Image (cartoon, rainbow, N blue to C red; front, side, top):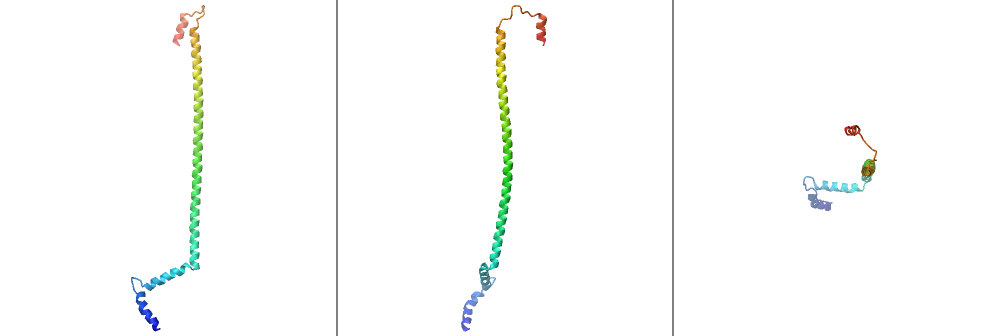
Length: 139
């Protein structure tokens, strides 16, 4: 027992030295934390927290995936709509170009026919009276 008193006289002042809390309380708290790491309750709590966090992460990833799929479907719909509009526009341009080509061909054909008529001499017995000529000018 005297040895215990001698040890207490050396260690006692160190253990009872007060900062704001005695050092022995800090040592007991540290020991509790160290022992608590190996306890079954702590292991069960850590496992439950890990599963809870993993479940929340999976839920968040699933929500993100659903939103990305919804956005993808919307953008695919818009792309199909734009593609349809572009196809209609392309078709309309081709039709217009065809009509312009036909109009140019008809115009050339009519101008050739007019030139042919202008270049051919009128028949000798072709006569137009003045009243008919005036009627053409008025219309």
